Image 1 (cartoon, one colour):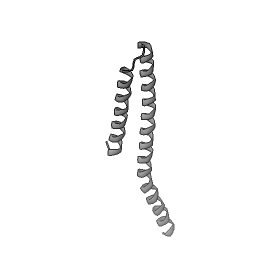
Image 2 (tube, one colour):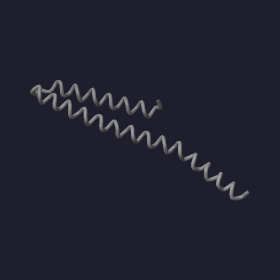
Image 3 (cartoon, one colour):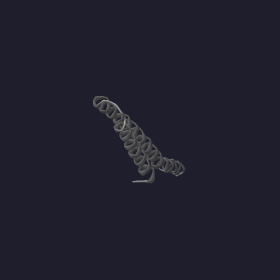
Image 4 (cartoon, helix red, strand yellow):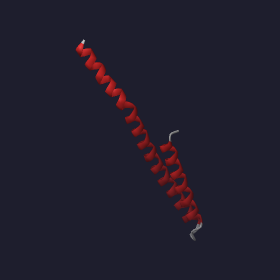
Length: 81
């Protein structure tokens, strides 16, 4: 796993831990606390999926960019022959 992926996972883990601890120490009813934990978990999962998608898109661009450049040179070389 690359450095960017590790950073994203660390940030998400830290945010999740902080959110859950904050909710658990809040003076709310049990049902309200469970609802908040559920909602925060959904939010964190959604944000994590978005960040992973962004990292994968950037990685795909970096992989495809050199390939498309080489393909263009190949076509130019074929045309010259």
